[in-house]
Length: 292
Image (cartoon, rainbow, N blue to C red; front, top):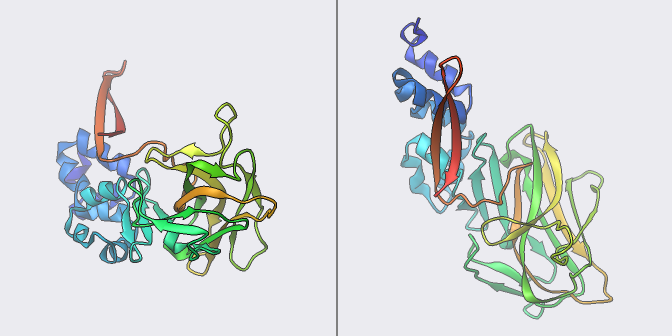
């Protein structure tokens, strides 16, 4: 019996919205009777975070609010939008719709960052932001950032990543480590990890290519269980004054659900479906997100 003919449309809509974006896409593919409901704004708005309108209305792309919610979801999962006067970006994790942010260099606190002898602020063709911070020369490297937990998806394990490049002519990072840590504001400082931004190519790398022209290295992780009352702090520090540091370019610090891969650049999200016959004669579907 076709339950879609027995249940009210708003009930079917609620049932689909309690699944996942992947399930809604599959349902729209295999059931013509449910396609219009599975693709509807009523379903896809539930997959969007509750504050998506606030983020978009204050962004560089407010016209996105007029889009169909399904189209908006996939746009936000593949295109970060600028918020907070262009100093941060907002994006969705494509599988779950959980929120991702990047604090641009201008949203960070950089010791001596406004001293031209030490740091240079410039545009960069690979950056989503209008400015990045380029280290000219310092002995004391200290970069901090923070984000309120109310901005993040609740009950989610997040990780923070330094997003950076190294100039061909750099000094002070080869085979040396820097300290990074993540902790909740007002609590005992979290574990300080020693990481290397610049190891020889024949050595296992801690820093990874992102697929957007930048490198990233994990600074730490945390479980967002503080609701609206917490602040997470991030820190990069190297204060050995026996040698100077130069040639580091900082785009920002990205905060995203743990294990979300940025090694592939999703410039335009499309979905491919493959149908294969099972021994039972039923169709088995496989859905893939692919880049164009």
